[in-house]
Length: 292
Ligand code: RET
Image (cartoon, rainbow, N blue to C red):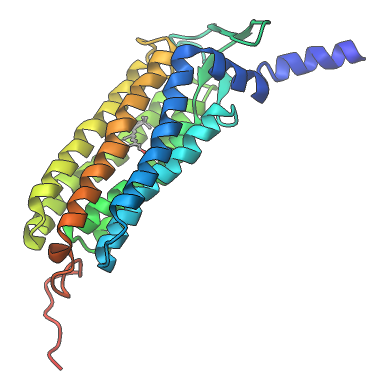
């Protein structure tokens, strides 16, 4: 009976949460890609809080809180990965480059080989929570209206959830790429807002210079994430190594999250006068308020 139970559990649960926690700790490349970001997320939160301690303008405060939230979500996101909670070993479907692949888990003193490749699926889940804050701060800097901010954020959440679906689908290779295609379509909507809509708003708001810098940083890096997924162990498997795939995302994250937030917060602190200028900043349409 005990034997049967252990056979069933080793088939159904090839890698426990504890195994994955140990694996991350013991695998140098994978481990550093995760633990370094926990440190950076915590440090940037402290740094940004300190930098913004004297900001009094509410609109500027909102932009700063939005940018700081990216680090806050990141701290939780990487903690989920480090603890093994949001990682899994997935067996890729027929036709996938890593079909039939095995993974040797680095366990304390007793390495074990299991079927499948490691997926850090928690990244995609938590991007659905962190990236809306990036777009919120971009939209607020551009002085955009609520309709455009809402549109960008809704499609952004769509990118990440369908990206999560692409990563977790093991029934069919084609369906993984179908999810990926849906995700890319949603990305195109976000890019439209960033490239076509918000620059006009930013010109009107007098924030074009900083907006232009951070939106191109965003567009280039977000495109980078998309290409990286296609190349990595979950996509075409050109990069089969999980540690290298993970380091790619971590490197993008360092610039797209902390670098981005630093630029936004630093500028906001110095330009509160522009952001608080005029009641019309961020209002919808060209309507002139009644003079009463
Ligand atoms: C996935 C795969 C599916 C297709 C697309 C993707 C795009 C991901 C992006 C991620 C950006 C993440 C950031 C995180 C910061 O917290 C999900 C990789 C289009 C754009 C900026």
